[in-house]
Image (cartoon, rainbow, N blue to C red; front, side, top):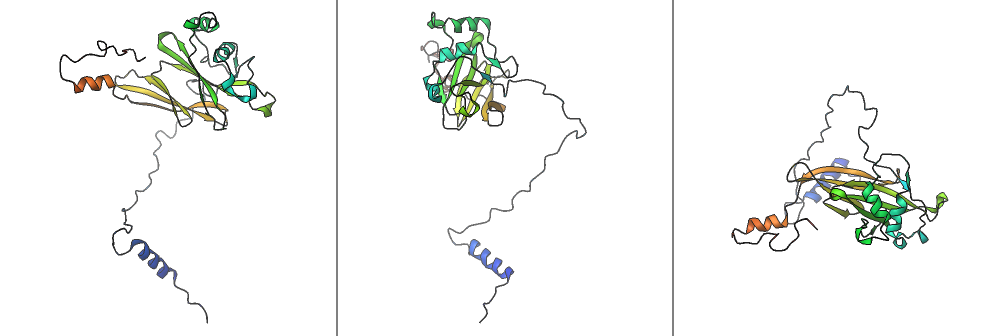
Length: 252
């Protein structure tokens, strides 16, 4: 006896009935029609493409750090001051000028052993920024005018014949409010000229460039400060100000 074949239309109707049900509790319900995708409109389509980048943010710029070896490829075993000092002699693969430090900061780095209290090299952090299962070294270097240089270093791969070396994969500086880690991205927050707003730049590892790139740069409303919120909630004129209560007013 030949099997009975159900018409395709009938099968579709039956399947729809099973999905939609009869309106009983727990059944799936339609959310309405999905909005149509709108293709972005291109303005001035006849403009010729740009021939060169207007600015150089130092993205993709790397530098081999001379005289530094990484035992076992473990950057935790490195002396951050030694790395910063050796980095003063590093040659970048292309010269954007953004890896240069002020002369006063260079002198302080060179004198870190003899004048540790004035050493501008901050305590290091270690994160797996590249996703290869090994930590990278992240250094902060204080500069005049409350500027901060942020640099990241990666132990070199052994398959290039340079096992044990160290490469700087990120170098940037700004008047930084804070540096944060989100996933494997480094987020730098910097003040904006617009009151109540700030810049946030996300630096992410790029396998093709073998460097950290500024993958997202945006201007956003700054979060309300705790001191301002407390001041707004307290209407009493005798309420202590941050200065009179002894809290730091300079963000430290």
